[in-house]
Length: 390
Image (cartoon, rainbow, N blue to C red; front, top):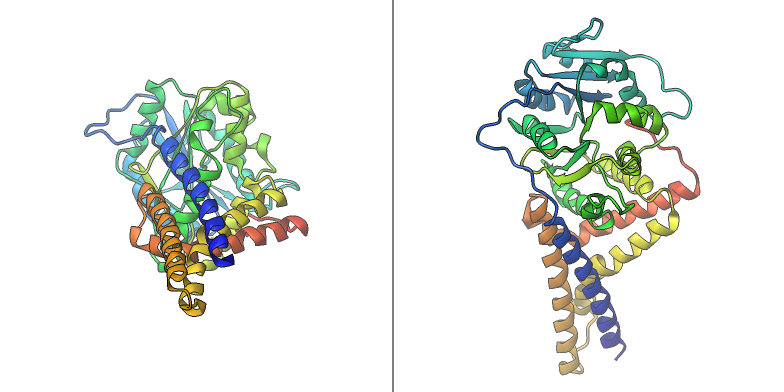
């Protein structure tokens, strides 16, 4: 009887979790999906693309190759090389970037930072702030990352959309780009959980205080950026995108978070170590370093995504056949529970355009993320310092 009770208990918890996921996916469908029209005409507005880069020799070439063909007389790109010790600067030069000195800036230019950030500043915010003196040459700014890949015409399409809808800030979620098994296993689940914990539709409701933004694609009017105080106003925030969105909503700016999988993608991390450290930072600061929030998320994920598979293993190796009818009920509930888990995982992978076959390994991905969340709790309790790319 105890086994039946536990199975019903966990099934109930899992059912509630599935309802939450389904609700999140339903609300996600209410979020606009940006697409690239067959013909994308220039709006005439001047745009500056800003890319912070610290030791990005693995990611930068792909990013630049996707952006450079989209540069026009009205669209320029400024990269900020932040104390890189690899081939980052050489790659910029190879792609035709020149040091930023004169005004107006060339179409492709870059800054070299040699000093550490001031006390209390994050490295990324310091790098982006260094570009601020050049940003008044454009009406719009697009902050993006070196680990992104932009589809042809996507940047102009996003700019046109923002202008047509009279937005002040537009941020887009990406397509999940992966290359290795460990990325395909973890990335879609890790990204999908962000959509569950930070519903995008609430960001788009002016009266709602919830806020989400993605620094991989943050398109903002220059005048709003100046009014906010730029990245100097969020200099100590490791999720500067969240902070800028929060400040924008407080100023009653017209903001929008939309789905941009058709416009660009991102390959955020390449190894388990990078995945672990990167998502630990995101979850840590997304929870505002609250250990209770992190533990709650870990327990929810453990109960609803890990235990279904564990229950199947328990039944397979330690189940009893002394009462066949009861044994059949146990198996039936466990399989139903596991089926709900897999159906939910497939929905997440499909939404992010990730490889759906890896959804079958969702319990393993969830277990790893539970470990990451617990590690984030440890960082909070021991006040471990967070760094941007070292």
